[in-house]
Length: 109
Image (tube, rainbow, N blue to C red; front, top):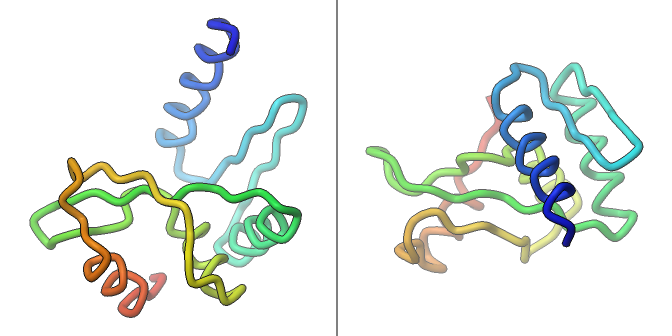
């Protein structure tokens, strides 16, 4: 991938984390999602169209948690997916059991 494009993608990822609203940016397209329902529905549409957005898993004092992608996670769950793509930020510590616990105990606030 072209370095300029990768730099843009990295900057967009940092920007997405820094704002309060969920913003999904694709090349030549911007979508601003203003509430939970819109966000989950947007990700459901993405998933149904064949895209598979990642969920980020990390570890904090409460154990293993979804550190990024709660709305994507909820969309997968509502669509009945049993396997979803994750990015593991635990250094490989997260196991299938912990992922199942996250899945079974998830509740959006």
